[in-house]
Length: 222
Length: 222
Image 1: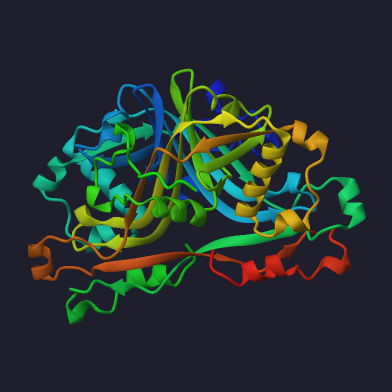
Image 2: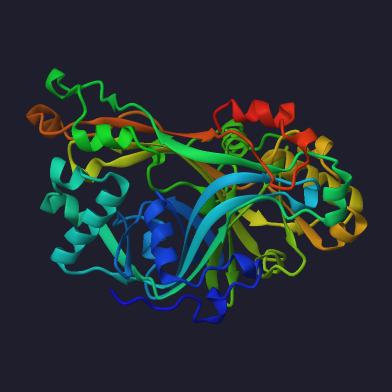
């Protein structure tokens, strides 16, 4: 995999909060791999539209998919798109309202996507997407039929132009507010957890115990 | 508060997954109030840009804020913007890869924002934002000074044009896959939790026990 340096273009150069910018390709991969969904933004009739959707990363490629009829996906080709993945890790309580903040990991990817055309890469893209959303499921579940593949579009966005911002730690209060000791200051961490698997109502009794790839996930933080 | 019906325009009419569309103004408010951050999308030089940011709702108004120097905020005025708030509630495991999905609550708001100009509403907008991110903090912490207010822009987006989608429940597998009993099917719920408050390193000993509005939040689901 080619590790390109981040922020090579004006629009992916972070102007605000530069101290939170991370110019490390590994950080981009880590944020993308830790996220669950992304927010995809496209321009439709001159106006921005942002929608949540699934994704998966393989090396330097971000795969997205959708129904062949999906309005937003038809607007992703031959034009610029933008994808954001954000994890909120906590709320930063400061002595002053002005310095309230959030701890977070954020990746914003800019670029042009290509429609994946070969059946082999289309299937690969869906595998990457499925394994991102539900690790272990590609082996466990029935793979897409030709009819299902015909209903599905897969697009590929290169990870060449991206910005990563990460904020950690406590508040950046003013010295006089620290001195005057007026309020509590610190971080309230936010974490995500998988609950116990809820079997489908029509699941046969033989499957009521979830298989290991689901049980193991349930026991770990999200 | 005026409760306008949802989806009054072509771009906020849900085309895909219509069965998940919720045409209920109360549902929009509930999703916006349950979310923590939003993704704001703007068009800059013809290309979409999406960024995570804080927000707060008061009645029919969504308040956003930023530094007066923020690139994205300068591009929010006199033009269309789009804001998405998404909560992922679980991963839906199906017998077939094609029917994998996520349970979620999603609100997408389209519109034109106005720059809030009066000092009174600017302060109100910041209160709404702060109380959304950290309930109880407006009373507890030092309020913005004139100098801090001068560095801050507040914008207001009306909630007149929005789409809400909510997915709940198990997978929509094909009858033949249910019959063949080939895989586990169900939902792995995803929940968010506040951790224990982490006091700032420079906090005085008198504040080491977090006040009630933070302790209480820490004990409840996010």
